[in-house]
Image 1 (tube, rainbow, N blue to C red):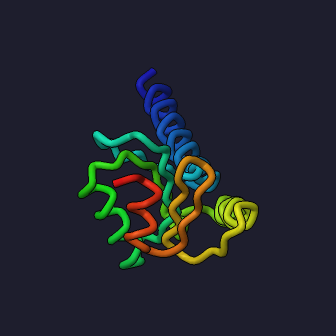
Image 2 (image 1 turned 135 degrees about the horizontal axis):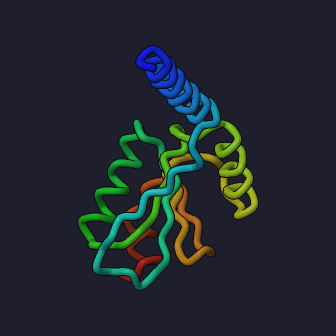
Image 3 (image 1 turned 180 degrees about the horizontal axis):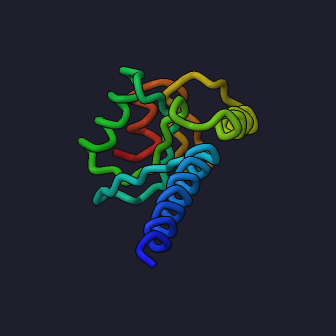
Length: 123
């Protein structure tokens, strides 16, 4: 009986390893982060790159001004999600140059342009 339970335990262990490997292969959905802030007057979404200095400055600017926003680091997304992002940017009339800030689903600001961001967010 002991030999049987040891084999079952091994089988269950290997099954869990296979499940973990298949999850990694399938990948995750696009990860959208939400940053809470006291100022949520506008819906703010940021397309950024994790290694981009201008993108980091845009995130810090929004944080310093207590702006609630969501963002995605495009370079950390799967290729299929990056394609969807490029299509979204193109549909809105922009080019894939980062950071890209979208305010209220209508105003698109490409680059860290502090004055345009302040104007769009009314700060």
